[in-house]
Length: 424
Ligand code: SF4
Image (tube, rainbow, N blue to C red; front, top):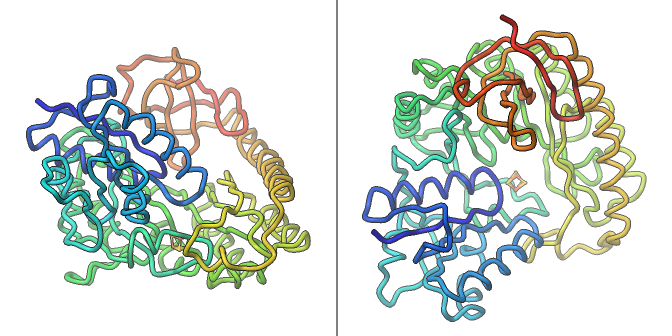
């Protein structure tokens, strides 16, 4: 059997796309290996969101291509196509974001080396999953929002939702394979709409919750402009839907939000936070913050810190703005100096650390219910579990506990992780 190794860069949606490709290859005559050295083909699934991610992928391609047949897939493949071929003439093939289901054709290629551009997307029901407890499912692709800094609409195309039946078939497969949690992925899951059935995101959550065996449903990412009161209430009312919302803020300055083309104000954002807190007491809110967007002054930046304090995020993913060729922001004047961006990044990190610590410390002595997902990566003798509101808790135990729920008393808390013991 021909051995294939897949290396994934980037977000959870890329992990899912790699699982999709592995599912397609596994159903054909290929063996997916975790050992790159023994592989004949190396597929590098890439990310274009930041320059740093592209640089890392380029150096990985450069090293792998010396003794492997390399296929570059994903966002960089869609964005750079001919440029990649020119840079790496020995490249076996390029597979863009619409073409993952054509991965076998790309391996067995004739003269055609570039598989990119819009084509019919197919999703296998049986993917080759990396995890055993939580299954990720991309429910929609692309984005119509065109935030000024973001490359996604250009590399993943316009927003399109999958059909509900295909998603439900994947969930049933996960349930029969013993998975307990499903996480829906999409650039903007709130605006999910299956045009054929007319089922929207609330409807999809309702139908998915009917599938027995799956105990928890999660989703990410939500766009603040589309997070209506009605949707918040339906999430709050559904017992299987986890009480954690990832809601990217990006900036707390209305002026910068406008320049970013985000279509909400800081007040609207905070009204969403209040509504979530009211409807889901004890629920978690996490966010993305982008510092150093072109023209961001110290006053704008202070406004971001203020919104962070008011919102009290459980966690933040914090990024330094990096210009992406082809986006509006890359052409804007007054790009912020790198040193200043770094300073702002550190300020946000520091503030978030303090907020997160206060939140997790308040859990000490409390009882929580966790789903054990696997061994902790740092303390290998401990098992790791996750609460409904996405808090990580580590407990003594063994791999026989994976996939089971436990009631745990929290005994210690750090910024992002808590320790606990099982309540007998
Ligand atoms: S909502 Fe904005 S940041 Fe998110 S994927 Fe779409 S364009 Fe990019």
